[in-house]
Amino acid sequence: MSISVPPPPPDSWCRIDQDEQGRPRVSWREPFSWPSYLLVSGIGLGVAVVLGLVTSLGALIVIGAGDALLRLALQGKPWYLLLFPGFILGLMTVGLVGLALVPFWILYTAFRIPKPDRLTFGDSGLRYEFEDPSRPRRQVRKIDRAELGGVRLEPVAGRQRLTIDHGAERLEVGKALRQPDRAWLASLLRTWVGEERLVPAGVPALPGNSWITAEADGEGRLTLRWKSRDARPRSDRWMGIAHLSVFLAIWATGEVLTIVMALTFLLGGVPGLELVGGFLLCWLTGWTAAGLVVLGYLWRLLRGPSEERVTLSPTALRHDPGRYFDGRDVCDGLSSDVPLAEVGAIRLERIEEVQRLTVGCGAAQIEFGPTLREPEREWLAQVLRTWVGQEERLLPPDTVETRP
Image (cartoon, rainbow, N blue to C red; front, side, top):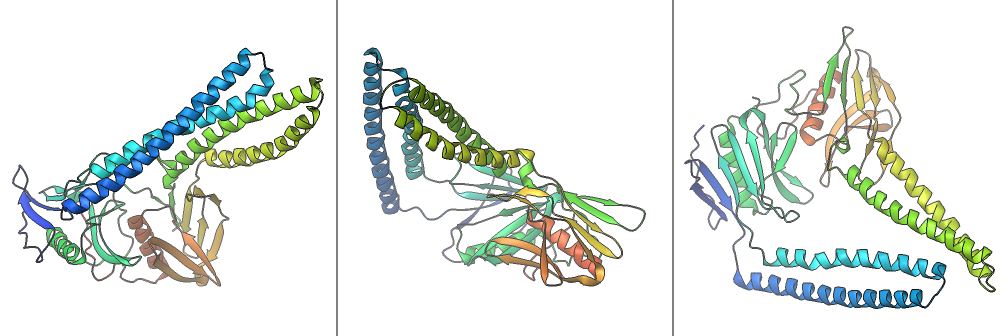
């Protein structure tokens, strides 16, 4: 589908050109300034040098402490006296290795000149190339026309946000642009998408690549079920499992060393060391309790998520929130059965940057789909409103909705 690209606003950061295949392309980047670049690079270089000096000093301390421990061992000092200092020295070495990598990342971030973000309009879909400061490689997203959903320009947490729905994903575009440029880009995307339409009444089709599975039986019941995103690779849950596993490995090493040292001091028959052994046993009590708490939390993470389910019948609603990880804790709620007559307002609202779907039940509010992606949560809101009879337009007036 060809598109006629209108000129951008005056003093715009956006530039219009064509790619190698002659497709229209819009690119933008914050204007480059040598003074600002040199200032940021200088600050980054200074921070990297300071961290490098701190790392070098720490390395000298660790090397000196290692030599001292080695000399003590060669002099015949009891091995149990060297266990704990050696353990601390090992932890310091691991920390210094991690700290030594930080200056290189700071230098890379400070001296890198970011490339322009690019949005290419093709016959079969969109191609979006952009820089992500948290990742070293340039990011590329391809959006097929068959998966294209809504184009949204909305205020979120005190700023303006432009997003494109593709399937069940929501991609933010032009985050660094100024508001006039972002509004111009939104208008261009709407022109490319087509005419604005309302969401049709009734149960709509699921977004592409949706996590939701819809099942209808022969008795008029519709069951919707899905697993949360933390069931997938690279989720926060797996990062939490990795971090806790490393901590427990260190904890187990400290546990064994403390037990060995405490028993050695208590049973070794060396005068004056019984008090040290008693102190280590008291300290071991707290250390063991902390490790068991972390171990229990790790077990909850390893159990993994369970499905959230919503069952709609002609007379009632049943909601099973399942089990999921919200980034801080494992949430495991109780099931709810709500008669149709007691279902209150169905609200799809945004608090700061978090979108929430809630259903009123008397004085209580039940949250649905906290782990769903926004297009899926909006689809679920419309299904619930249709079932209750609270049909309304789902999307705001400045939204374009398309269906393949």
